[in-house]
Length: 441
Image (cartoon, rainbow, N blue to C red; front, side, top):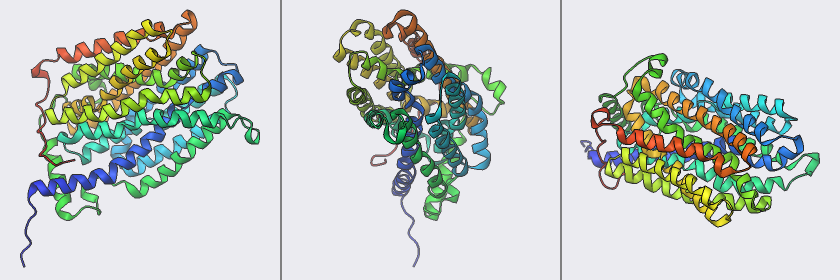
């Protein structure tokens, strides 16, 4: 009896559903703990800074050094992922940074803090751009904004769930002779190591190697990804140094820096902003989660809307405008708790809604041969700016006593990014992706 071929629409729907369910939830869980292990220093600071005698400037510098090492190692890490395969390399990244994150429990002063943050940045470098590169192996261009937005919902969720959890762990102060902030680092690092080991069993490097797909599904997906890769891109294959001189690459890096710096700076300093209103650690933990909860819902909607309309530029620029509006208005609400939480929510909604459309836009600008270095380079520069923003906020806060003034440089950066996106001419932008057929994930 002859085999009846499956209609392409049905094959596409079944394939993408299986790929999405297999990869995205697991990668979201991994990224959740990546963010938790990166930013839990913000909650640890509520006890650690006093215990170790760390000033705002010292703490800000220590926190920002993570991003210096991240910047230096990120592109080489992504190139190594392309060479050795995502399954093994992502597992290596997670196991290494989990062990180092637990070691943060044993810092004793400024210099050990500086050293451990540098090591943590080097260990984690490459995870996020590596996953972005990995997703381009598995998801056609028409799916990427929603998939990236769904994957990156882990960022606000890490703070939404992690804030009260971290605040609770601080209450373990004195248990077995350890401080609450030490328990926070140790207990939040253990799942990272376990998930790193699980990567070896869950992830598959390329669709052609996926035994959990049928032969027909493997052939269709490989062909679709190959067809996407054959489309003309604004940035073809070039060396790292050529990338650093490419105007499209530099525009994307600058645009990304505003949203990245906002999310990074608030993840570190927002608990202290809220604590300044006289809240307890537990109250700060629960209230800190509110802006992230709102942002986690809206960023998925924004990514889906970008895919449905096949529009990237306006979706990116409007998100940056939301950041600037929220942070700019903080100066008017600095002495009132409820309006402050509302403005912080606006800023974080913009920072996270930005991610899906922007990374979908970037991946279409980069040819497959430029994607590994290009995506990592954009993210590395953005993270370096984010690390600088942490330190800058600490210095301005120490000199002025005001978080509102300390956040104003981010307003300027995000407005510059929004204007840059809107000034991109149609000739410098790739053609819109094809809207998927109804019923696709």
